Each structure stands twice: as structure tokens, then as C-alpha cells.
Image 1 (cartoon, rainbow, N blue to C red):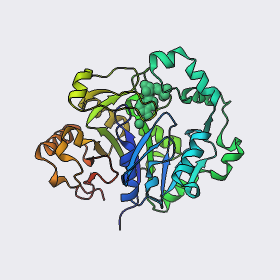
Image 2: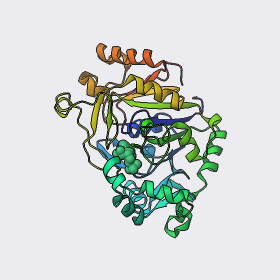
Image 3: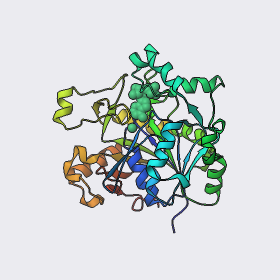
Image 4: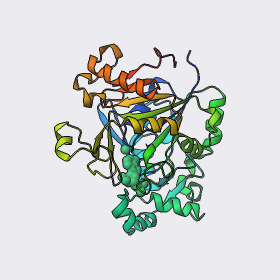
Length: 341
Ligand code: IMP
Ligand code: MG
């Protein structure tokens, strides 16, 4: 019998750390009763499950566990078309729930962002209308999910339901979006997104108090990427990115991501900002091809283990989860051996 857990997963760099895949893994491994998504449609999460690639913009990545209830937080912003088409495409109609106070982005917000030279030029926004809708929310003129009849079948009070699950001892997973340094408050302002992306803000979006949390997992990729503008220490020139085989494209925008090596100083800061209790490292196989698909710590190539050990020592927080491939199950889960389960 495992202990019940409320786990929050957040990105430690600039988004695209591979949270989607990791959350999908945890959804299955921890048999979570509910998974909650925060944020909005600017954040795309990729999940490769049984050979099929899913690009999710609203539905929690833990959908791969067919027993998990899928929820969208009151602090989230949805687009009706994206929400309804993902629900249909994934066939999850009977287990998706939307907080009645989630905000709704409409076409006018997208147009406003496209016409904003600061967002489309200087900031390199994904132009999904998220910032404009957020501004309307602050001005208290944004429509909420409960204002739209077609969303009514999905509406619940997510905070109430999730708090009740936690109190009754079920496992619950909260899925953060984007990364720590895209935070409106703690990131590289003005080159940031329109919300705070750290663990405290994620909890606030759901309506969970800080003392309910058991584990905060901060996810780092084995290298740093950034899509859009803003500082990126140690940024590699394009030829070097190609040479090292580190080319990636944005899930939502398709833009090529800028790349830098793993950044220990940023990682240390992310650990403090999020009060991390565990660290996950994804895409270890991108640095060490022999690590591909490995599921046991002992079977990793020695140089990959050394790299992980060195980072763990410098961060002072256990690296409990390691991604070694694109499939949900390509994970080394050290939580049991490290005393977390
Ligand atoms: P916006 O939030 O779409 O306005 O974009 C602001 C900045 O955050 C831009 O640099 C975007 O590329 C970046 N950004 C927003 N969402 C994500 C994400 O999910 N992953 C990575 N970058 C993101
Ligand atoms: Mg992404």
C-alpha cells in the first residue's frame, strides 16, 4: 500500500522540459484519481503513448490512465474549440471536468494580441490570446466557463472536489505549465508569459492550500531550450545545436527552439522558487544516446550516471525521475529506492 500523495509538477527552465510525458508516467505509476491542468492553450504538452503522439493544449497529460479524472483549474483559461475538439479526439468526454470559473478566450483576444506590436515583435508571444484574456480577467470583464451553455455538461467546482480527494487519501497530480523563468513575477520580465508559473501559483490556480502538498517535482531537461525572445545564457550557435543533435520545435507554434547547455545556476534558483522536494531530468538520452529506453538506474551508461550524480550533488535535491526516451514508459523511477514511496 502506498501513501496518498498530492504531487505538483512544474517546469524548471523556460517550458518544454518534458512535463507532459513525465506527468503521464506519474498518472499511471501512482494510479492518480484526479489530474488537474492549469495555465492555458499557449502551453503545449507532448505525450507519446503506445506509439501514438498526442499534442495536448488543455487536457491533462495523465489522460493515459483511463481511470484518472481529468480536470481544468479555475485559474486556467480555455478556448472552447480547443477544449471540445481535444475532448472528442481523446474520447474522454465522461471523465473531463472544467471548473465553472475557468476563463474563456475568444477570437477577439487572439486578434488583439496579433495586432499588438510588443507581443508579436519584442516578446515573441505565441499569440494565442492568453495575455489579452488575462488582462480582461483582471479588469473583470472576461466571460467564464459557466457563461457558455455548451460547456455546462463539464462544469464542477474543481477546488472542492480535489480538496475532498486529498482529504480522503487519494493520489492527486497537479500539472503545471511552461517554466519557472517564464513566470510573470520571477522570470526574465518582460520576456515572460502572462502568469506566474511557479508551484505556489499553480496551487492557487487550482484552489489548494500550500500545506496540502506532499511533493513538488521540478522538471529540468538535460539541456535548456527557449522559444521566443529573452535572455538565454550560454546559447549555442545554430551549427553547434545541429552538431549536438539538439534541434526541437515548439508544440504550439512550430518555431525552432533556441538551445543552451544545462544551467546549474538557473536550476538552483528554480529549486528555491518552487520549494522542490524532488527533481526530474528528461531527455537524458539526448546527451547520452546509450541511455535510450533504459528503465533501471543500474543499466544506465556510467558516464550518464556520473552526470546525474554531479547535478544532484550540486542541487542538493534528489533526482528521482529520469526520462530516457519519448514514450511515457521510458522513465527511470528511483522514488522507491530513495525513500519517497
Ligand atoms: P505568451 O505567453 O504566448 O504571450 O508568450 C510569451 C513568451 O512565453 C514567449 O517567449 C513564448 O514563446 C513563451 N511561452 C509561452 N508559453 C510557452 C510554453 O508553453 N512553452 C514554451 N514557451 C512558452
Ligand atoms: Mg511545451
